[in-house]
Image (cartoon, rainbow, N blue to C red; front, side, top):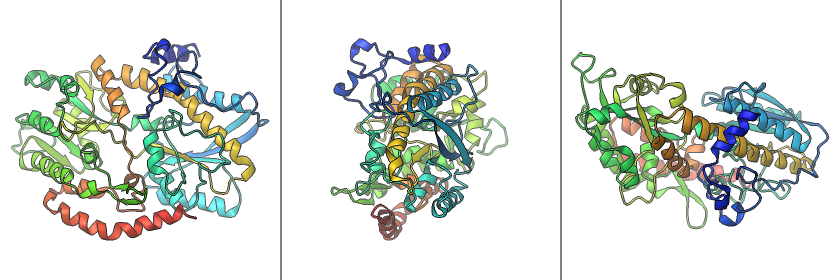
Length: 489
C-alpha cells in the first residue's frame, strides 16, 4: 500500500495549487470548473457516486471478461510490489469496500479469433435466463459485435443513474462516436488498462540517428515538422545488406519496417476514418476514407516500401519487433506495450514519439489504438431494479482505475520504467492526448473490415484504391442500416 501511495504521488505532474488542470485522461480534456473541486489528496478528480449511502449488503457481482486478454486488467491475487498488479488489487478492494459488494470474475476467450464464440456464449446465457454474469468486458470487436446483436443494455438509460460520461475517465471522443440514436451500448477509457498499452507510437533507434547525423525527432515534434514527408526523408539511404545475401529482406538494415496490422497508423495519422457521422448525426462512410490524403499516403508509403530499399513491408506481425530490437531499423510503429515485452536488448537505445502528421497544416497528431483493448457493458437482460447498482459499479470501477491503475501504468511504468530519456516520457502526453476512435474499426466485423488499407500497402496497389472505395460505397450503406437497426430496437 505504501508503494502504491508513493507511485500515485509521483504520478501527479502538476501541483494541486494549479487547480488540478493536468487531469487529461485518454484524450479527454477536463474543464476548469469540474477539475477545480472534488479532488483527492493527489489532485485526481473524485467520482460523484454517493457511496456513503450505497451499500449492497455483500451482493455477489460477477464480471464476465475475456480470458485471452493481452494484459491483465481484471484480477490480482494480491500485492507483490509490481505497480500495475498492486493497483488492480487495490482498485478491486476499493470498489468492493465502497459499494458493499463481492466482485467475482468469470472468463472465456474473446480475442480476434473468438468473436463469434463470445457472442454465442452471451446470447445463450441471456436467452436461457440463467443470468450467470452481471457485467461483461471483452476485446473491442467482440463487445461491438455483442452490441450489434442486441445483447447490450443502453448505458444512457435513465436507470443507469450513476454513470457520468462527463467525467475524465470516459474519453469524450469514444462516447461521442459510439452513441447512435441516443444509445450507448459499451464504454471504455481508464477502466481498461489495455487502452493505454495499445496506443500506437513510433519507435526511433537513437544510434542510427546519431551515426547518420539525422534530425532530433523531439525537436521535429516540438517544431511541427514531424510529418510523413520528413519521416520518409529520414529513411532515405539507411539500407544496408547486413545479412550479405544480395537481396532486400528481413535481416538487413532499413529506415522502416512494418507488417499487416501495424500499417494502421498511416491511415489514421492522416486524420482519415472509415465511418463517421453526417451533419445530422447519421452514420456514413467517411468522405476521408477515399479522400486525397489517403491516396497520397498510399502512394508515398508504397514508394518507400516497394520501390526503394529504404523500407520493407512484411506479412508478419512480429518481424519488425525483432529487427528493431536487434538494432536493424531506424523506425518502426507498434503499440506502446512492446517497449515492455519485446524491446529487451541491453544494446538498444531508443526513443518514443507520436506517429507523424500527414503535413504541417494538420492541427494535431493522431493516435490510433490497437484493437485488443476492453469495452465494458451491461447485458440486455439485466433486471430493472439492478440497473442503478450496476451503473454505480461501472462508474466506481472506472474512477478507481483512473486514480489507481492509470498512474501506476502510465506514469510509473510506461513513462518511467520503460523509456530511455525524459523527452520520450514527455512525448507520451502528446500521444495520449490525441487518441482517435473509429466505429468503422470497432464494428469491422459487421462492416467492411480493416484489411483494405493494409492490403493496399502490402500488395502495392495504391493505384486501385479509388475503385476499391467505390466498391465499398455500394455495400457499406446496407451494412450501416443493419447496424443502426440494432440501436433502434
